[in-house]
Length: 256
Ligand code: PEP
Image 1: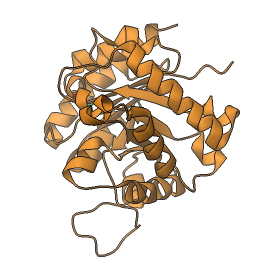
Image 2: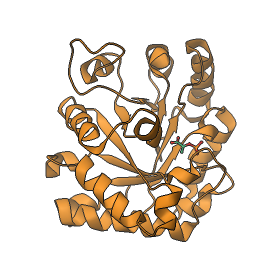
Image 3: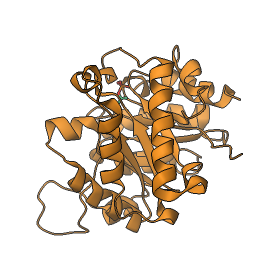
Image 4: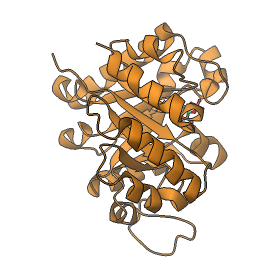
């Protein structure tokens, strides 16, 4: 049986100046910078990436971006590319976050191009999928997630797929304080694992980390993280403060 190392990723969204980010990262490095039990990633806004990279240097904490364009360069005002992110030592990139999908109109085919570009540039995509409240109430959760996973990973090879991270984030649980029950979350995570088996085979599917995201906090993390197919968390609000983020990493480390 493959033991997947847990991964805790902090999505800072549009929060923190570079100086605020360095202050937070400095605290995180002091608390977590040497541990290797859990993979830890912080995702500051673009303006804070380079200074965060310097503050993370020499620690085990990795750097991620929150978005990118699929082209390497060109006339795409306001955008940032995978090679640019690699040049400042980012290793991960969040793609298809529900805020990008709903507020900025990103669709599956567009997100898929980014996934392909990230992989081509040795960036690990954290591909976000999840249903809205209306979709859950209509009983279409699994169908929605299936479409997002299949379309998001189209054209990805087996070898590449093993490096992808998927974040299941029910949209109704993001930033709302409402958390999916462990049964609700595990059901969707197991379903995603099954989809990955069909798409890439069992050996690859067993390697892919599937994170839960949606109001994960130190209080609810231990139960969620102890589920068979929940391999970590994508954390919004609770990643903005060193104490809560550190406690989440410790919760992940404590799960046997
Ligand atoms: C997120 O935006 O990815 C997220 C999970 O946010 P929160 O933890 O604040 O719900």
